Image 1 (cartoon, helix red, strand yellow):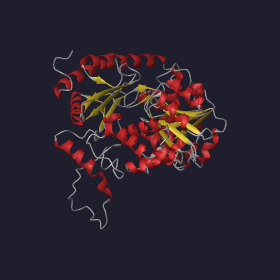
Image 2 (cartoon, rainbow over the protein chains, first blue to last red; image 1 turned 180 degrees about the vertical axis):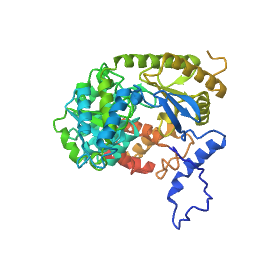
Image 3 (cartoon, one colour; image 1 turned 90 degrees about the vertical axis):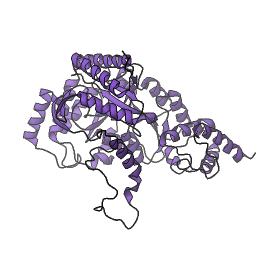
Image 4 (cartoon, each protein chain N blue to C red; image 1 turned 30 degrees about the vertical axis):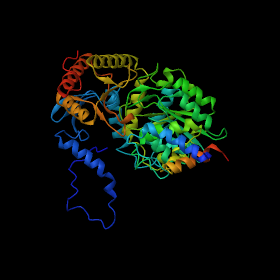
Length: 424
Length: 82
């Protein structure tokens, strides 16, 4: 990706060092050319957006203009919750700006223990371990528990942090076709019976917003003697009777060995975690390198997270409203003739499939001009080389805002020719 | 046909649906260079090879396989464990 690249990259720039050997940056030439070709068509850089002011979980000022936010994963709108902000301010005053230390040295404050307790209460599990980001939680847990001679079996559409966790470790890595229970079962059967096995799944896949058949997959995994890790980053706080995620919704949370999650979506701040009932779980604090060899989260962050998690336990009303928003946006876009990532709304993510990158970038810019921000997702981060406009709804989007969003999509879709003029 | 020739023929048949440019297949044909496959095509193709021969080709092994000949050798090795 090319986020935050401010200046044009000129290969003939004479300030560049003239290397006597091969230029290590040559490998990026195709991407530099693709980006330049896109910008040469007159489009804005879709990966260079700056939020000048943030007014609420659903509104910001971008390019001097008030913009509705529909691509922030801020599902439960906790970023501006009064109690959450007060907790953060208090922690800043009482504990300072940062810990300047690892969790296993000087970086564990009472706030870190408190947020781990909040997670144990939220999931009703015995153990919780907090990482500095969700990315590090996957990186750390997967690379540490699956070692040499073990097998990690993962869905092909897994998040980059899962793949990177596999790369960092020494296990054998076996991908299977997305959400295909039969493909998972066949691959598990081909692994030596005495080898350690970890099956890695996600509750909601963030590109298309589709949900995994966890019930069937966990059954197959357990029958093969595998441990199961489920990343619930995009479902925490929203899906399941208590907001514990897709595994809770499908009634099999008690059979999941490790739940990975993040504070940077529904919780509304930053950080990552793993919760588990494994009796030996706590040893990970000593052997998990992405946990040990980095600074712990600032006191204000863990204080905001703990407050937010406690409030999410009682978020039934917000959850119901978020479902209404998701259903309405899905139905409205489909009726206008947009092609969507799922036939029915399965999560708070609605992915609008674009015909190609150029059309996608044009549509993204037209929406921004209307005053709507969505995520532009493109290959290689997307399945099947699709270009997607990813919309993530918030429980704080009002009914009126969802109506406005639909009208913006209609105008931008017609202006760019993504939908026909005659469409509903 | 020898066992290896048979395996080569079966692998070649699995390559065909993804051989958009009609590249002539030989031992030294490369997946990334000659066939111009991206990582998504590779993953689909590998899944088909795994199911055809009832084997596992882990991502760790895939990193070592660049040519059709190397893949045929790997399949032959994996079919006869031990």
